[in-house]
Image (tube, rainbow, N blue to C red):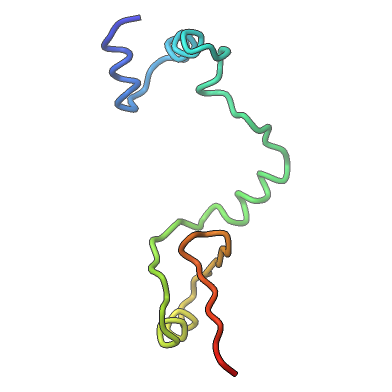
Length: 95
């Protein structure tokens, strides 16, 4: 394999499946390791893409104030809270 092919892979440019297979074998992986889906897609995946395929990820900032939460509630977007995220913190308010 030529150095220029390896450089194209490193830059994320398109290369042939044959080239990817050679790299996979050199790294102790099996053929198809870099282009074959790892999880088989079933009918549920197609339904999910049909339902949510139009959505796109957007950057958001941490909401530290009640005002920020009230403003977010006025939008037409969906906010997903992930308690496992290191940026999410639980605050206990006095009663």
